[in-house]
Length: 215
Image (cartoon, rainbow, N blue to C red):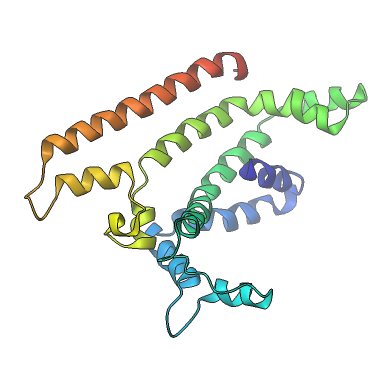
C-alpha cells in the first residue's frame, strides 16, 4: 500500500519521475548487511551512546528504549522498518512502471463522463495494474518466509538468543549445528515444510486472483 501511494505521487510529477525513481531505488542495490548495520547503529542503545533514534525520542520526553537487545516488540518494530526500507524501492519501481503503462484513453473517457478521481482509481487504475500488484503480493509472501539475512544484520548470528529466529534461520542452524555436527534430516524436513507453506499461500493467492486480477 505504501509503495502504491508513493508510486501514485511519482506519477503525478512526470518531469521528476526518473530522478525520484533513482533515489527510491538506491536502497535496493545497497548491500542488505550494510543497511542492517546502519539500522543497528541508529537504534542500538549502548552504555556510551543512546542511539540516534533514542536521541530524537528524548526530545519528545520518551525514555531510551533498547531496540536491539530489549523487549520483543521493539526488536520486531526495527525488523519491520528495516524490511520495509529494503523491499519498498523494488515495489515502487515496478508499480510506477505499471501506472505509466496504463492507456491514457481510459482516463480521458472517465473524465468526460464526470467520474471522480477516487472512482477512477478504483475502477480504472487498480484493475489495470492488478497483475503487477498480484505479482508483488506473491513475491512479497515468498520473500517474507525466506527472511534470514535481515535478522542477522540487525541481531547477529545467534537469532535464538535474540528471540528473532526465522524459518530459514532454523534450517541453517540445524544443518550446520556446531555442537552436534548438524542434522541434515531435520533441516530437510523443515525446508520441505517451508516449501509446502509457501506453495499453499501461493495457490490461495492464485485462486483469489481469478476474481480480482484482470489480464
